[in-house]
Image (cartoon, rainbow, N blue to C red; front, side, top):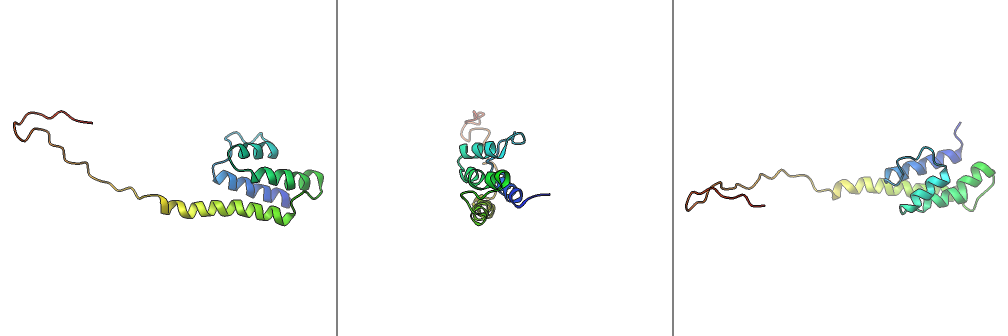
Length: 119
């Protein structure tokens, strides 16, 4: 059975993963270690979520510094950034246009000697 704390934590981890912030070997890491690794990669909200909400709610069964609503807003913010990146990234990417290679002359127009390819 998944608790509300675990469900919200998984949403946060998925959002971090979608942004490419998770290490490849994340399975043996605790939530605190995972959040610390993500923080090293520039996103500290996951560490705040673990420290101030997830650990107190999951293991201490007490309220942390973040309320349930604040934790939900924090995760929703992470998810919103992922959604925004997905919406804007195709617009920013330039479509690949197949341009034909410029026609290169193989011999000199004046004398007919073979041309040396240039870089």
